[in-house]
Structure formats: structure tokens, C-alpha cells
Length: 60
Image 1 (tube, rainbow, N blue to C red):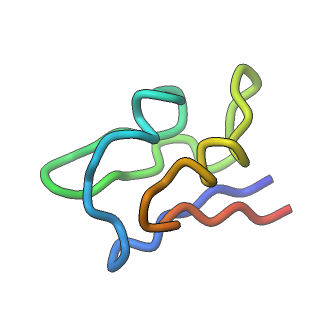
Image 2: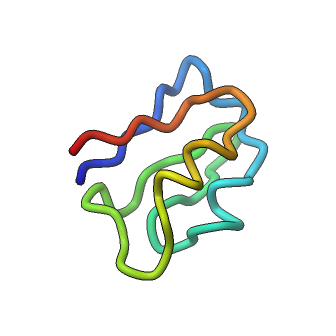
Image 3: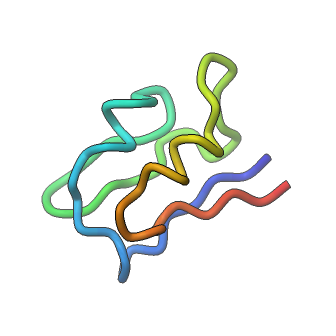
């Protein structure tokens, strides 16, 4: 699985970082992926679905 963020869509709300700090970090006004391979402890698909702007992209 590969995780990316559409920076144009991201509003920096921090939902992703709160749900999965192993993969996401908010820097300034945008979230960044700090581990593009995803993590073992969370459901990255659930995190993506929780994003209010659908800025998180999950690729198999």
C-alpha cells in the first residue's frame, strides 16, 4: 500500500495525524506523509475516509 496526499485539496485539519501519527504529520497548513508505505497499527483506508476533503490517496 502507498499513501499520498493531494496537497491542493488538503486543508491541514489534522484528522489524519490524530488518527495515524506514524504516517501523517501536519506542517504549517498542510499534512505531509512521513511514511508512504503506511503503518501496521491503523487502518489507513479509514483515515482516508475520515479526511473532510478526500485529500488522502491510498494505492494498493
